[in-house]
Amino acid sequence: MNELTIWLTYHDERQIQEFGLKESDTIRLFKGNDVSMEGENINHLNRFYSEMVTMYYVWKNRIESRQIGFCHYRRVFRDFFEVEKGQCQVISINYGSPVFQHYKVAHNYQDMYDAVDVLNELYGDKNPYSQYLLKGNVFIPFCCFIMQYADFEKLCEFLFPVLFAWDKKNGLDMNPARYMEKAQRDFRYDDVNYQCRAVAFLAERLISCYIVCNMKPFCVNTL
Image 1 (cartoon, rainbow, N blue to C red):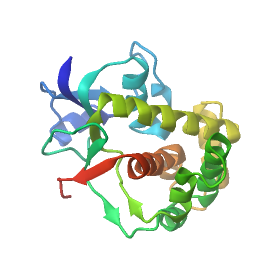
Image 2: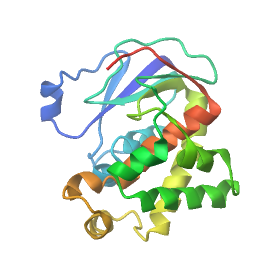
Image 3: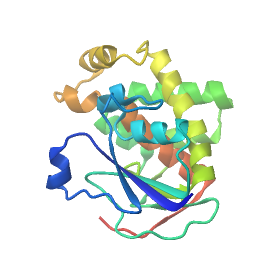
């Protein structure tokens, strides 16, 4: 088993040269929209799930390393540090940033309310995750982290049931066409191709939620 594997997500071959992406003993490149990839995957939803497809693939196919991390072509870790159980290295931590208000300004806030409803159904009213989404003011952005594999499994066991329940609640059925229909119908913004990534934007908040509520994050990189 490798000591550390960092999975770096991209979706266009041009990004390899443009961003200088390279594999190494530590870094593995993952083309998120490669639907021919063997193993259980949701790569057909890369346009909407972004780098969540990489996390899903690693989790479901149990590609283990003692420590595991995820980043993407525009944001990468420059340094790697040993993480103990319950610790998490992240690229950035924003303190004093109201999570719900920030989401409401940038995206369709009803999607956040739907995620809260799902969390309440799974964990009961006033659970710490819903409270974080509605009232939290510490935000860990970008879906970039390094943690022990056992902690990563727990994160996925939290994250994906919420995302898939949100999908079901909105009648999307993991169907790309329905994701685009929802984006065109719901969003009050001009850039539908950006706002169609609602589930990825929610996942960013949910990953932050899990780390803030359950782990000890530390930031070394500066953007």
